[in-house]
Amino acid sequence: MGSGKPTIDDVAALAGVARVTVSRVLNGGPNVSDKVRQAVLAAVEKLQYKVNMQARSLAGGKSRVLGLIYSSDVENEPNSFYYAGIELGALRACGQVGFQLGTHAVNQHSLRKAETVMELIRSRRYDGLILTPPFSDDAELLEKIKAARFPVVALSAGRPAQQIIPSVSIDDEAAGFELTRYLLSLGHRNFAFIKGLEGHVSAEDRFAGFVRALDQGGLDPAAARVERGSFTFRSGTDIAVKILGTPGHPTAIICANDDMAVGALFAAHKMGFSLPRDLSVVGFDDTPVSEIIWPPLTTIHQPLKTMGARAAEILFDIVGGEPPPVSDSGLVTLVPHRLVIRESATTPNA
Image (cartoon, rainbow, N blue to C red; front, side):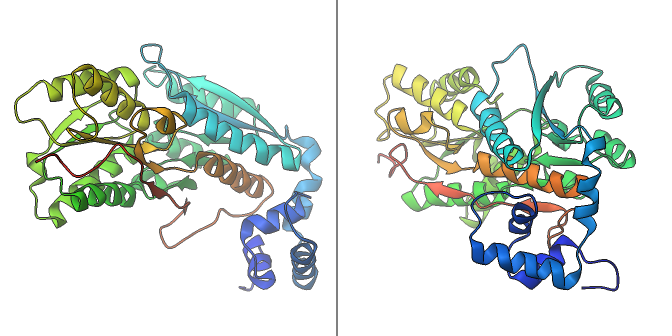
């Protein structure tokens, strides 16, 4: 601990628990054992920690409402599971400490998208905001919010945005690398990659991991078939038809999310491919549909509810006067992903 006032991180270190556990104890949250609760309270007393306590006494002058900002594109169906998972996690965290959660859709193609977000900030409708892509990657918007000294946490932000404001994310580049390395271990050498929306930096990181894995595997990344999708089932279907309708089609298609991967599976079935013998398809997110589609989808599990909850918890601390957590990677809080191996990927048919 430095010479200044003790922080929540000092309390966590002395109690031997995580920062989030201290927040739960101080906010009266559940799922904390008596032993841990006593350790935290003892650390609070020893350090004479009062910052959060004082800030919370001013809560009557605040709305006690957090805002979740997500994109709304009338031309494409929304990635409903992604937003539902984030919202559920944030909502549960808010319920534990007496906050409410409001959601606000903003069209990412609108020329006024940044001004719409700033108007919400100026209205003081929310005590803090959770931003999802593509807003969480809009550096100009993030700098404006930072200059306004308004509490905000970004979700799935790319590396540039992670240096501007606090964010919660998986390591998308590492996840893309791990998924591609798994396909390489099965013997695949001919790949296609269906990207997500342009400007979605975390999805571009997944592609960067794909490129790194190919390079380390002795393959030329430029030889892979790369197409741009929109995260939708329809785009996955349409692009897969185009890829599989040309001679020398790939033996494996990697999709930047599960919705596009399910679309690619649908197209391959319709075109008469035997899956996964003739074609392996993998995705990202581990959405519920990935388990019920045939064949069940090999994918990267992204813990959306955990990410939403963690973003809300960081906002509680910031609203309460605490500095955001800082790691070796900067202002980003990484949550672990994992490779989920199912039946949509196998050794390529010779």
